[in-house]
Length: 357
Image 1 (cartoon, rainbow, N blue to C red):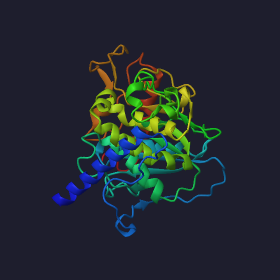
Image 2: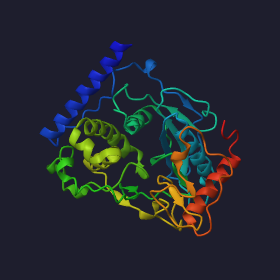
Image 3: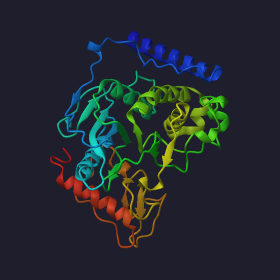
């Protein structure tokens, strides 16, 4: 087993080195498309696909919602809540929501296969992610896009900590993706670093949009081109100390933005795609609540961000156990976005069978 792990590591290291070399010497040299690890026959690498609904594709612009996840308790309870709200809004007014897949990159099934439509992807070889588990996301998408039979012509890449608050239409147009702009993705600020992966003759650095891979609605054919590049650029960025230090936990987001631009796929930036409490205080006409930040308040409803509040909701409080049913609601004065978030988590946990098991 030790020899096999060493072989995996050598293959991946060689692949990343070659990718980086190709990017540096020529913008016209295509990124290496081989996948991590040694080649395998189809019989050795059949993903497990469970509960893939096969409905009628009556709408021309339906999108398939895909969420990558590990098998941790932390990711799993978020996926269960996310899928609950997906089902509530799928058939609502103006919805272009088609099928749903949890892309589980643990390499093995779990006990929620009957609850959530799931595709089993293989994780990266041991040690490849260097403790940055998000590197498994692009590799998981590559496997899913190659192996799964996806009816819809578009994909919504979402995350476990997304709660859909109303039916989502297909926001993409004319060959462009639809994406949420993140204030902390700043291509111009890091131009000297990004030029390692996005050569000058590919265009101005402003061609790189301030986005991550999620939420993004994109044509399936475009994503099939982007995904291997996204995977390879992510690995190359993580291997480069300067890039790794500069981008930290958003490295994989930069890698997707670069890869999208590398393939000439621009994005329509939708600020109304989602909100992020506690900074966004009203749900309004948004489609998704992204509960990535902790919400801490005193009992008078004053935000105490950076300090554990007398009342709090933070997904990181539930890393080893799922949140209990009927979480206490925020005190008076807390913004509507946070109140809505907790109420929606409570509704989901109250209606999902065997919650907490």
